[in-house]
Amino acid sequence: MTPEFGAAENRIVKDATGYLDRPLPGASEDVARQCEAQCQAILAQRRARDGLAGRLRDRLVARPGHLADMETLADELHMTSRTLRRRLAEEGTTFRQLQEEVRETLADELLATGLTLEQVAEALGYGEVSNFIRACRRWKGATPHQYRRQLREGR
Image (cartoon, rainbow, N blue to C red; front, side):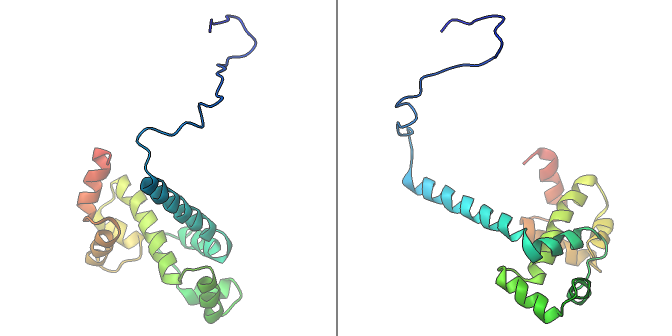
């Protein structure tokens, strides 16, 4: 193929007939199944961001430092906490799971900013820094200091 200079478009044309149907070298059915399962899990998570769970996440994120309790959010949504709990169960989640997800996401952002552990713990609504450290170990498998080091090293 010879380049054509001064053309109206930039493009490369290749005849892909048969090329895309060839098996990948080193392809593994097990790896393909694992990748597909992972993609399905990601899609399920994205779907969970819609509906009531998504609205609650948005409300929880909107007030860092003060994660509202279930009663408060149920009142804001004009329903009882029992109805809220039931509707979340229908979406495959719980209020506690949503709170933990929001806290973990905010912790990622706050730890990257360089705030002290006390400031991060307070912003996430933890009364004690030790409770935040335990939560960080549960989420990341590392202490906040170790996790920060991993962030700096780009892992």
